[in-house]
Length: 156
Image (cartoon, rainbow, N blue to C red; front, side, top):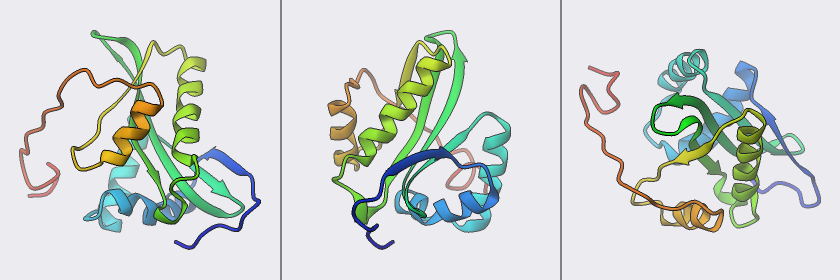
């Protein structure tokens, strides 16, 4: 992705169309490098049907960041908002867009009556972890996963 023109206002809006999700795909691939378009399209379709919402951060017509959220009601925390991912385009990092996406998600969580905002991070993403800690998130446990079939559980 190329650098957005300076001076534009950052707008965060919900990705609502197939076109929005298509435009966000190159940024999502910066985090999920092995995700091909067909699998992405299928996962987006299913995730949206089960509560996932994607928001894009734009300057003009250019998407500079993406955040995915899922509201969830669980026994441990009550009503919570889970941040599935925060991805800022490599060319636009270091400008505060990640913080603005997180603040946006927190505002939505409050408006929807969530008690807590949760997220997780792979070990390799030290810069993201610094962002989360700077944003007031604390590490409180471990995240575990077990692959059942294929790499992502949906491939044979």
